[in-house]
Image 1 (tube, one colour):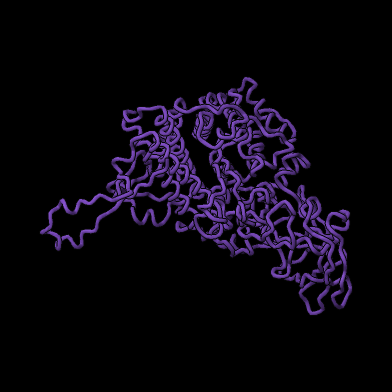
Image 2: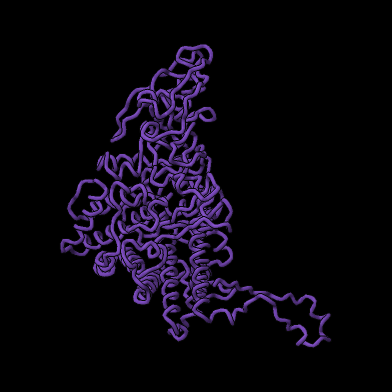
Length: 632
């Protein structure tokens, strides 16, 4: 039973006028309100308080600020898997500052602030459960239900602290409900990690295990398997590799989890995969009238995962233009994945080329007559085009109804001719009566990550063969070549498997690889995508037509033009007579010259938010307040 708590603060401004009244007359009980003191009592109260904790965890993955989902920017933008695009280099600046480590990236970044504060909201809600149903030494946990609720809250609290530790280094450790005037200070880094590990460990034995691979309910709540997986992850992140093997092996040996078949890898991040055998813990999101048609994952949250600047959409995805980023893997990531396993289950489920995007999927295009500028024509001509279902591949590549829409902008910013489709929303994910808002669950831990964490722990501390088996299991499911167990092979496999899943940046930092692997950020030129289906010409008096040339660049083969992007123009209505094909132009966005790029000794950590430090500044004499991270 859900109950609400109203904590009121009585205004005393008019107290002088009431001094002649009896105090007892002022003690009027509020009807329909449960007092703080009487709420935290029963098993039902414990369940209700725990639900509120989960609700704040779900909140983290919604829209916290602006049009881009802050969690996605915060956890993924600093990695090397994707370009965080926009309409141009100055669009969604707060996200691009993080993505490129721009010199303008400062302590007032809205995404950093919103995620930081939301993580502490989660900790506050978890502490309400722990303080009121555990006490100091478990004296308040007088039922199995209360013990379980406290254990789930401990895991959530430890998880939130773990994110803060990874991204801020020495954030305040908050192990109980603070008073309203509390001013917590930086934690000791080692003490914080030991607290996180202990919280996970203390929760394990008070939690039920998932009841098997088909137990969908066991995937959407904190179970013993989830606590063990997070404990193992915390130990790996802390460098306790030998110790990490024990909890991770318990998850593996439990028989409650497995990898989804390679042919279904694309379902992992959609409703079709909710609660499947690979899910160790995911946030359960259900369409609810409370949220209207916006749902939990509202339009702004999904919009950064839509295709943008396209004329029509594949039938399986949402039929709406998005914004935020351009669904684009970095050339670095696409090169590496294609070199490793071009044509694998994983590659086809994760990324797709521009040309394949236009021809692989069904499009909702019926036979229609269009006004088009044919090659060499001086005016538009009416041409009838077949329905998508009746077209050959060659005809699809000459269809003006699909492909980039370059009327408003001459190119798609930050895209090298490949698209991430891993998280591209599906129609089947939609809320009822909505065309843009979805209700797929949000994964926090899946079995593939458990296997890779175990493989890393074995590579670092000795293997009896089970670490190699774990690594090869992930590779086999992906359709990728199987390798020996080395740390470098684990690093590469985790990069490919967990791309855009909030792990890469933290991994690069803890492995000591960040400076090398992120060196291209804000220092390399940015890719701009055009389409050879339309004419390009030189920005000169005679307007000479420019014919692009083919270039093989690593694993990517595309067309390009050996001129500056600014000197090549077009109205992008006139057809070239050639099929749709990616033209990639590389252009300097100017931020490298302004001092951008990853800076060792600074960018390994985020800055503490400006308003947090401003409200509680560091005092070196007393050792209190929030001490800003180095370089910020």
